[in-house]
Amino acid sequence: MRFDLRRLMAACALLLATAGASLATDVKIHRVSIQVDQNDPAIMNLALNNASNIMETYKEKGEEVEIEVVTYGPGLNMLRDDTSPVKDRLKQIADLSFPSKIRFSACNVTKRGMEKREGHPIPIVAEASLVPSGAVRLMELQESGWSYLKP
Image (cartoon, rainbow, N blue to C red; front, top):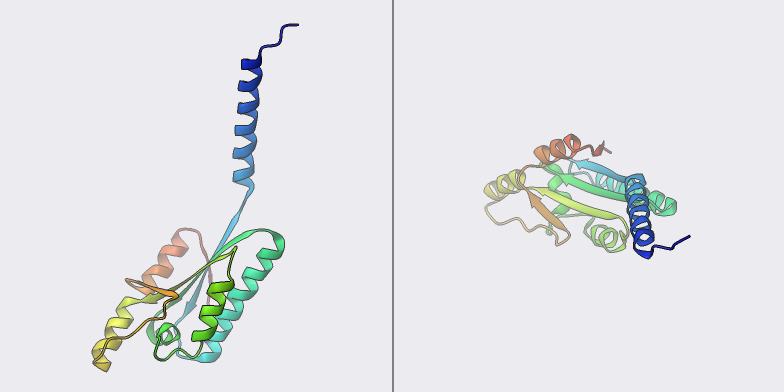
């Protein structure tokens, strides 16, 4: 029996590629959007508790999770640097989220409206990013297959 190293290496490469592709498709990444639309510290804390519990549950399972907390309307106060009653928790959760991913999204439509009414720029916490519209962002996430939670 003649040993052909090139054929053996090609067969091994094919086997590894197939196994790798199979493993990659078996890994499910969980994704959830959490809506905050009320200027209520209890609701804000409940949303953050939900996010923390979700991250911890999937960390224990060894599974990946992505969370996006979307604020709009009165809920934007959660992400305002000058008014947030949960500012310290936002930083703590963002810092401790690995290996999970958490994002805080602030509605720019709401921010512009608040700025117009209040007559000054509205500062957003460093952990957050602006999205054009909080409502549209939630729609887009759901259309992309994300789960939805409203505490």
